[in-house]
Length: 252
Image 1 (cartoon, rainbow, N blue to C red):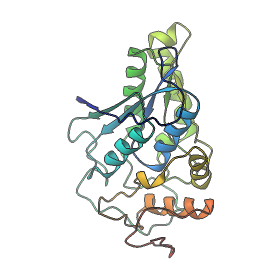
Image 2: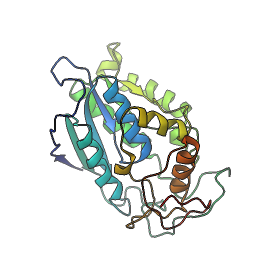
Image 3: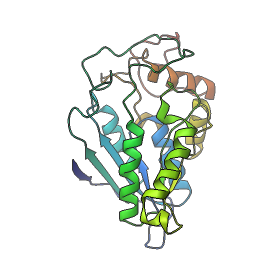
Image 4: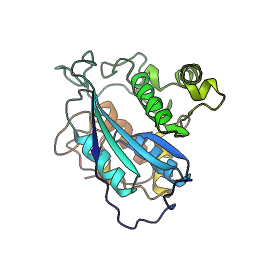
């Protein structure tokens, strides 16, 4: 595993003053809508933000570039990029030489081929370890159980179980002061998430959702379609450009 520190622009952005007495939080930041909105919420709550982006063998790094832009826009205290060993998550359409499904039924049941085995379990474990090591009080993760692809590690039941495991597995937990696992989006629809981000000044043109890594988003994978649905539900135009839109409402 390798850590890489990313320099973050200090540009006078309005927001809470950074100082030693602020509560620290680790924010898992992929560069997509949900994690970026979670970061904006953490910022609004006054946390000193330590963003964590994890490279897990995904096909492209468009989201990673977006994560850098979002971290810079919010002038986070620190943004670390961590690379996991190659092949760790090979059994997924997002990491393996397998076609990403398109034009699927968003109301279907079952777990799609884009599921990355226990990804959030691994990511949260890393985030909690880092948080405890630097005496941070919270970990933010942008999971939602509404308007999502059915991944088991995005459900509230998983988060509750992880909270219990984390409290049992860490010194802070045993001493009665566990690192909080905060999921501010868990019960929000994609439209509600976008509206919240807009309220907090998040520029969604900095984010990326498409499972494919082209110049423009494909508009047909599940992630694009949930994003497009969210912007429609929020009554806001998506600032990204799309190649296509399975639902017939391309914005650009």
